[in-house]
Amino acid sequence: MCLYFEEATVTGTGARMLAAALIMACVALVGPSAPNADLIARPLPADAPEAVVPNRVMTWNICNPCNKSGQNVGRAAEIATYAPQIIGLQEACVRDVEMIRDHLEHLYGLVYHVEYGSVLRNRSRCGGWPWSPGAFGQAILSAAPMTHRVNVEYPDGGSEDRGYMAVTTTVGGQPVRVFNTHLAQRSQEAVRSKQTRVLAAAVARHDRAIVLGDFNAVPEAPELSRIWALATDADPGCRPLTGGTCKPTTDWFSKFDYIFLRGITPREHDVHLTPYSDHDLHRADLNPA
Image (cartoon, rainbow, N blue to C red):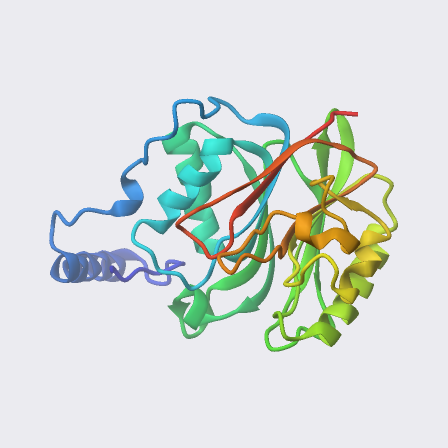
């Protein structure tokens, strides 16, 4: 790995000397021609779309820390394979999302706007200097512009700070409120119940909403009842009382990841396995009206 500064703090001759020292450090650490896996485009399937697919949404917990070789270009290739209009990411470091977004544009020709819902600054998760740790939480990528972003940290995050973010964008030619959340860890049902109370109150204010995220709970979990009362899953066969018909979205074969729809109907949905996370990609194509 190479050392770098997020902001220039030295100018003039001092800056040039510092830059030279950092270059030498990089050469010493990785060699002058060491390959960078994040610069090698991964081939896409023959049927991958060549442009962003309108009315397609996706949610994906990208796993942190996973530390797989070339993980960000691999993550970008996974997203480019389906090219959704909107992607909600959880367990997202800002720096990773920046690289994924750049790879999507420069390697695959897919251009996205991005908004962040960071709730934690944690060097052990996201790197950075001790006085400037990396920001961690949620992110939304959208092919259409986004407005009115809010970022809410839950009053009780459980064992780690958690929250939701929301933006307004356009789906099917109409404005829609898009939420992205990550609830408390799976053993913390009481905490998740408090969190869904906060989230449901925000969702209820909108007639058209898409709620993406890792809820860390199976469909029949009591703490999800407030969300089910407001919205349906993109999988028409997935309901609280018939959780066994829901496709699993994790490596441990549980459905934890949801695309909840309010005032919008799904046209098609699927779950896609991926080697870059312990959560699968959950994708839905929506009816435009």
